[in-house]
Length: 436
Image 1 (cartoon, rainbow, N blue to C red):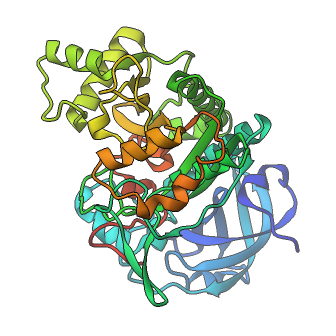
Image 2: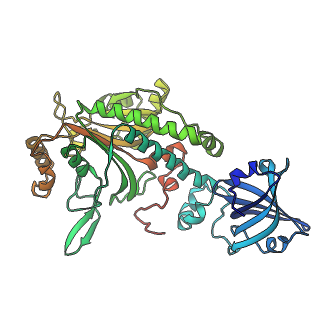
Image 3: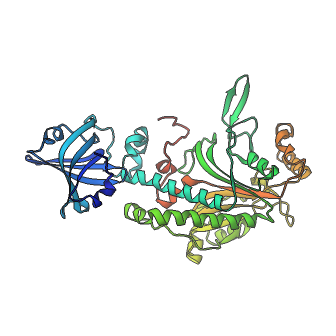
């Protein structure tokens, strides 16, 4: 008999069905057993009577065993969801060892057990609320791709082994590449710009990036996924901000449409599709507001996590908005390829996007003028030779362009109101974690 997924059982009342899944819960009451079976679509109660041929195998089951159950699907008001399956046969596809290293049924919100849960990530991911994260990620990425493709973007896949840094050498993972040294890419930045020089005009990429950042914070990891965007013929970084806010609205709209109610039920979080335009502040304006609130950061050319949270709360209170762009950052804290403001060369045409108190995007208009770009590389203390291939992109005509790169794990961290990106990453990589 063809397998029916649990979410489809409501249409099968009165019919013979076959379901497959994990044993989520067990309750034996002597002459009758109740088993909760879980598949990726939901939970269902299975009733096993003592007179049934399935009763013997039901007695052998342990939590998280994998089974195939055939029986009568019937409406039952007292059953969870109002429907149950009366088992006729139970086939044990895989018997789980009885002592689980972590609990699967219980929600694990205790930070103290997070390292243990990450050790046994495949068991941790069996929890329906964990699977929901990756269903939502799928919907978010589908909305991102749909937006890009419907708006004329070309998808590219850039190399992840490189010979030079995107920004500096401080966060590079060095690898042996035959008889020479190479590095894992920090970003597809330089290759996105190559696509602009190639005349592609608008490109996007979904791919991994690598940062040898010895940080243990809740927002940092050493390998993570980025959504990268680059577009030509822009007038300023405000064109990029206009594009990103439209993209964010489309992504959150896609999530809300498909999983808004499920997120609210599972995690108590309301998915809000943002109104346009997003609030925008210069970094200078941001610092002035924070100073008025009695909050002073350590760095004049950056925002601390505390400052990000405070300005986001200020924006939420004043405008009722979960997003805010912070733009016009000092050149001292930005990459060499950021274009400088004509009115104040100490500042760049760059921006960060904050979402619910955390930076999820950095972006900028890039410097496309060959001689100016060479000078900016030298100003950062780099030699020109390692950037020879990159500089060639700008020798034979290159449109004015810019881009940005939203981080999906930070977005998901805030959508689900979790305390760390580790919870919303399939397999986290950090300073002390290379397994599983």
